[in-house]
Amino acid sequence: MRTCTELQDPRLHSLHERCTGVGFGVSLRRVQSLDHYFQSTYDRVAEFYDDLWSPNVKTPNDRLTRDLHLRRGERLVDLACGSGAATLPMMRLIAPGETVAVDPSENMLRLAVERAAEEGLHLLPVRSKAEDFIADAPAHSFDVVSMRFALAYLDWPRVLPAMGRLVRPGGRVGILTSLATSAPQAMATYQKFAEHLELDTVAEPPTPREIDPVLDLLGRGGLVIDTCWQHNFRLWFKSGVDATRWLLDTGYITHPALSALEGEIKDAMIELFGSHLEDGFREDEGVPLDFFFAGVIARR
Image (tube, rainbow, N blue to C red; front, side):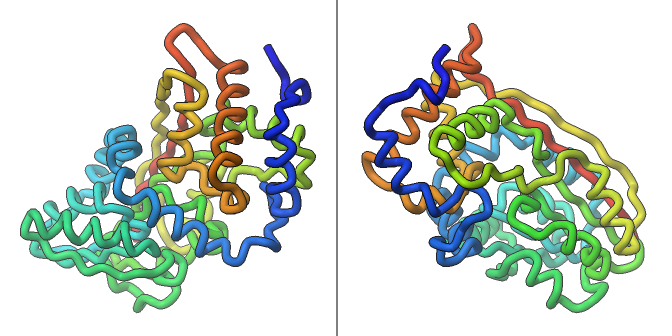
C-alpha cells in the first residue's frame, strides 16, 4: 500500500501551488464568498443531482416525511429544498395547503417548481439561505418545517434554537442530517492528502458527530423531541476515482479550495485522491463509502 508521502507525481507540485494559501480548513481569504461557492456548487450539480444522490437517501427521506404526520390544509416550509425530490411527497399530503420552498440555488429552485407544476401543484419558491429565512419569517407562521441535509452549510448551533419560533402550537419540525462520521474512508484519505500538501489546517466536518447536540438545541427553542433515529448505509464504487467523482458531482464535497483548481490540475487531483482511496479501502466488492444519517421530529 502506498502512502501519500511516497507519491512523487509532478502534477502534485502544481496542485500544491494552487491549494496552498487557499486552505482546505479555515484559511479562506482567497475565496470571495463561502456562501457564493456553495450556491454555485449546487447550481452546477442541479441537473444530475437527483440521479446521483436522491435514490440513496429515499429511505430516510420517506421516514422523515412519514414521521411528520402531515395533514391536508397545513402550511409547510421546506428549507434547503434542493430540487424538490423530498418536497413533492410532502406537498401531495398537505394539498391544498401551501408549500414554501426555500433554497439559495436558483437552478435547484427552478427544478423544484417545474417538478411541482408537472403534477399540477403550486409551489411558492423563495431564493434564500435557510438561516436568513428563519430569521425573517413571521413567528408561528407554519404548521410544519422540514430541513434536510443542510446543517453542513449553516451555523447550526445558532440556527437550530431559532427554528421553534417558526411553528405554530402543535406544529412539527423535521430535520434529516448526515453526521460528521459519514464517509470515513474519504475523510481518512483527505487527512493524509492534506498532510502531504502541507496545508495549514485539516477541517473538521461541519455537521454534528452525533444527534444529541441537535436535540438539545431544538429544545432550547421551545420544542419537545417526539422521535429520533439513525439510518446507516454503504455505497459501492468500481474504483476510487469513481467514488471521488461521485463525491464532487453530488456536491457532497463542496470545499472552496476546489474553486482554485480546473482542467488537468483538477483531474490530477481526482486521480491522485482516488488512487489513495482505492489503495486504502478497496474490498472484494469495490471501494466503499459509509454514510451515517440521523433524523429527528420535534413538536411545539
